[in-house]
Length: 48
Image (spheres, rainbow, N blue to C red):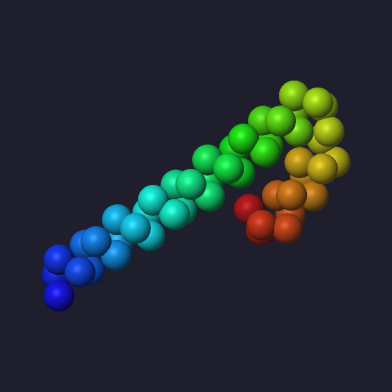
């Protein structure tokens, strides 16, 4: 059971890492094109 838990956690963390990587890329792109309202809107939607 412990091994399964560990594998599940690793899977979960890789998914969340991927999510944050994607989020970071989107935010950097928006900042690069200087679209601040879109960046703020995105942050509000996620709830950060």
